[in-house]
Image (cartoon, rainbow, N blue to C red; front, side, top):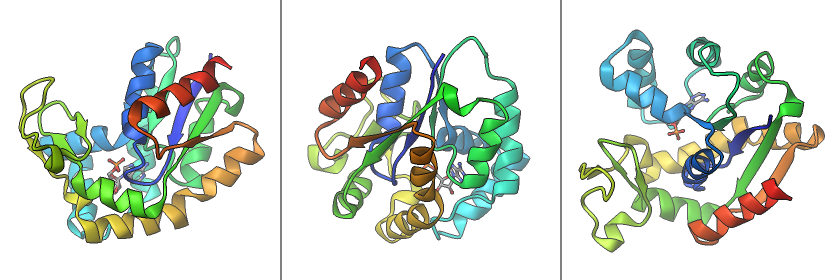
Length: 212
Ligand code: AMP
């Protein structure tokens, strides 16, 4: 049984594609950022630590020791009979090693969603997220959408989507997460995906790679 990892810089659409794939193959969607925001919203001890990092406004990752403790509680609870689609984890080499304690690399496929820096900044700054169900809306300010078409929740900006933070997050991605591309390439489980075309086309490319 294959499990899937989505790699890609902030604004690459990896979250959207990860959710679509999970739905398509009836996999468990492991949305790291969503899980973390949920903790912060409820105000758990983990959530307070995450929020403290986000409040600094530097687009930094939460440190590996904190995130690994948190992720391990989630990995232990996974249903081993169901494939998992990981979005936002692993994000460092240390996290990739942690994952291998639970899922062997031969049971993994990694989609690397490639998008130019210019597109990334434009996408992130026009992105809105439903405050209720978490659905992401690209170019929401241009299309004038204010409410979620799934649950009716209000759309808002994520704290970390502000332009100055986005640039920092891209830099963090380049230095801490991009090394995973080489790491998974060496393991021959990396699949490059052009993330520039519209959502439906990217989805098709991903599905064709799975089926192929
Ligand atoms: P995301 O919604 O996936 O872009 O995540 C939002 C923020 O949560 C990131 O900017 C990080 O501060 C934190 N975060 C999410 N996933 C991880 C991870 N795997 N490791 C460390 N920090 C993370």
